[in-house]
Length: 399
Image (tube, rainbow, N blue to C red; front, side):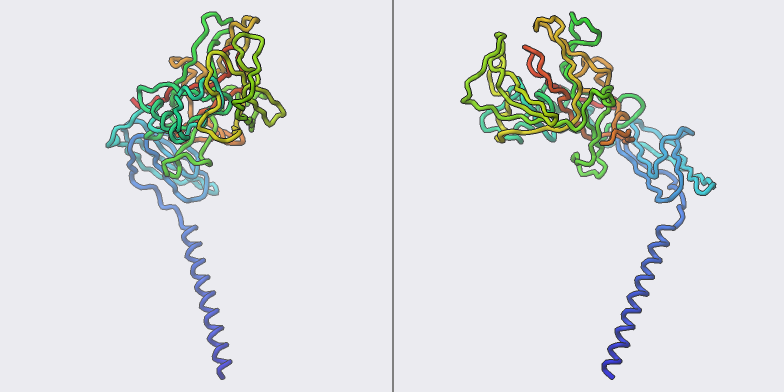
């Protein structure tokens, strides 16, 4: 009798479990398949903030403002730099049937005051170079955090000064206090120290040391650039077969006790100063010159070697004189830092140039963070290594 009672209770409990599971599944299915009931009458957002509208419905979606299509994505990310009310229309096409929903987006002026300039520096890790430990200046006991703080002191605000990124791969990561919107045309400018050479034989040539630009939109709103948020700005060289993707270089710490190996030119203090090797089978040395006698290896990096990976551009410097006396760096057409003078349109960047790791263009509502790294691995004679310099940046849409 006890055994039968236990069996009946067991069957009853199992039945209740499956009934509960069926009920949960039905509720879930009903929620997932519930029809879209429409947009809100209006949405409100501040300038330079991203409004996300997620209808959570199937079909082909078309978002329009004033009859101009602004997106075909399943969710709308909307941003504006103007105080304005925008009439919003959503059309959903499903199995040949089109439903239209109307709303409006009210963009208000922000309560605080934004700066159009860099507001923070998150990381700074230069490669080796003749200005390393000088710009910014290393002082005994400085750590990586100390040097990031010094880079921040140089770059933040409207009175920014310059930092050097050294040879290939050296980088800085900075951000703004608002989202720089992805509008029509170019969106932000990166300042450097590029200039045209008065005696250059080719147009738009002089001192141009192109840096690769990465951008990130803070989609999860955690206030920092995450690894999965970065996209590369596809400049004029990105799709050319002379550009190398996934390039890697390693620099080796020099032995301070090694006797220098002077070169044949007066400025070549040590032509076997800092060894490097890349993932293409190449190896070589960075030369120490007579103009800078401090360490070219970051003194706050204790490691015996360190590496960088990214996109590498074709060398752009050439010896115009033929005797080593006059080196010229040719500017690439668009999309790079320190690649054209600060008053030139080519130092302005369009967020619409951003691509994912497969080279496919992505549509970002804007960007919160920017990374710049030196894009070439070249020495230009007595000028030393080609190294990108960054002297600030600002939002072109914020007045």
